[in-house]
Amino acid sequence: MYLTEELASERIRSHLEHAKQIRSARKYRALSRARRTEQKAERRLIEAWRARAALESKLHMY
Image (cartoon, rainbow, N blue to C red; front, side, top):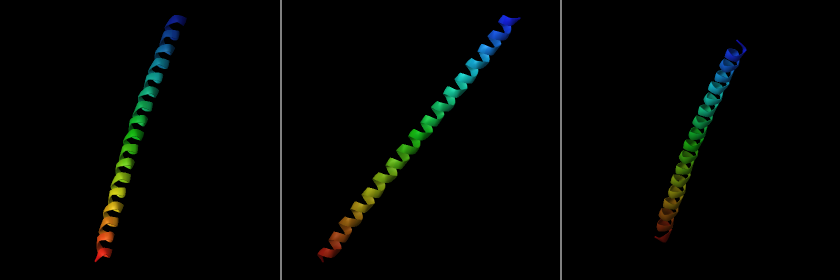
């Protein structure tokens, strides 16, 4: 009886650890996705600033 309870308890611990690892992996992927989105937005903003500066410099030439 004791062995069965111990095996069941170990199985539950194993399932809980597996679920924890899955949640951690999902959180990591979500964080990575958010970082990529943020970096893409930053690059677009820099491109927009450069385009604006180029247009302003052309306007000031005339």
